[in-house]
Amino acid sequence: MKQLRAIRVLMGALFLLGVAVCLLLGTHVHPMARMAGAVQILVSASAVSAGVALFWLAVTFVFGRLYCASVCPVGVLSDIFLRVRRRIPRLNRPFTFRARSRLDVPLLWIYVVCVMVGLSVVVFAVQPYNIARNMASAMRPALTEATWGTLGLGAAVGIATGVVSFIIIAVTSVLRGREFCTRWCPLGTALGIVQERALMHIEFDPDRCRSCGLCEARCRAQAIKMVSRYVDQTRCVRCFDCVADCPNGAIKYQLNRNRPASPLMRKVGSKQ
Ligand code: SF4
Ligand code: SF4
Ligand code: SF4
Image (cartoon, rainbow, N blue to C red; front, side, top):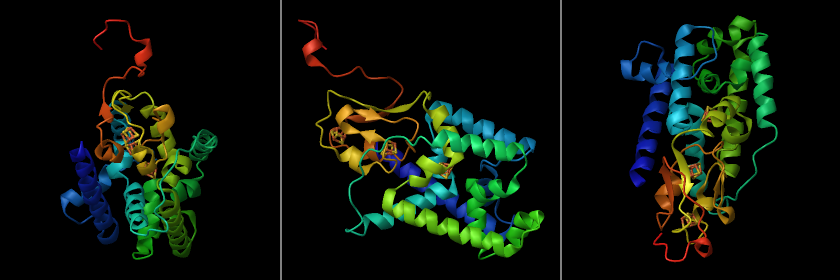
């Protein structure tokens, strides 16, 4: 299972590099870099954007939030800050389970309404790929002309939005891991609703678990509650840390659901 995490890290690095190259150098770059930008989920009226969004909904329904794991530049950036956190002993405290925010779905609806009434300023500020675009605009102000400029707002607004977004992602990631992804991002909430019904999921094997708590302590989405052998399937961002680090192979990425461990309830003579 360590291979899954290695693939996630490698893919994340490649996609982030591709997006950065696209945003900073323009579209006249290597086709592989263009591809990293083309597969991003965007809210727009174009058929291409709708096709990409449908593709990721289908992927999420089968495998879970792989988009959040490796493809979204904001998610990968958040993971980079998490690595910084792990190198600072004072900050590197174990994560603990946090209940799902009651605001996530209302925020998603507010976002949908803003999109429907054409409140582009919200889309430009909150949509993950636009967050990356705003961050890059500090180095390439012409980028903001294509977005904020069309609203009659100057490049300075786009750059300021990018700087504020960068600070928010950096601080929340260092303090709380994938905080933005699991509580505030409307796209993450939408993908989480689909992921709750995904075919593949992160699953405890109660018979193997020794209650060491390592998986909960490592979970950047704070989605694991070890005492209940519970994984919040809506918030998991498929980082695969739990499956890679469990010393007993007791948490897995699999198709099947496990039965609850309860040896006292087994039938006498049962071999299982
Ligand atoms: S939750 Fe949002 S910001 Fe986070 S990785 Fe997913 S799409 Fe990107
Ligand atoms: S790391 Fe493995 S053994 Fe430890 S609590 Fe999690 S599932 Fe159980
Ligand atoms: S449940 Fe596991 S795979 Fe999902 S975010 Fe937490 S540690 Fe990562």
